[in-house]
Image (cartoon, rainbow, N blue to C red; front, side, top):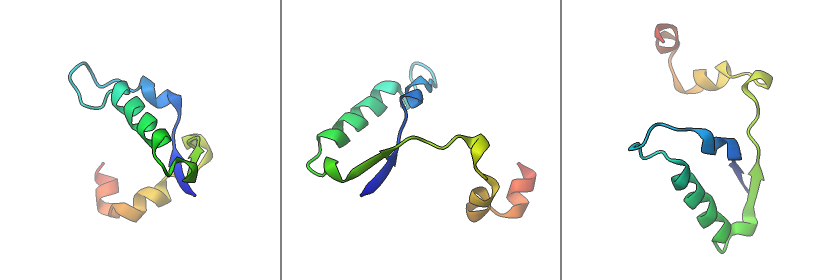
Amino acid sequence: MFPVIYSDEFLEHDNGRFHPERPERLTAIVDAIKAAPWADQIKWQLPTAVETRRVMPLVQQIHSQRYIETV
């Protein structure tokens, strides 16, 4: 199984009229995945709320401590 983290709440993300990240783009991607021959290999998962997980260890895996402190 291949996990895909998705929520319809993602469709509420709006970067403005001409930005390429649009709800329609996400809907098209989800529809294409669901129609793919391997769709039965997908495990759809809801995202974990940030409040219930430790985020910093994940951030530290990809960014230096100096960068984190600067930001």
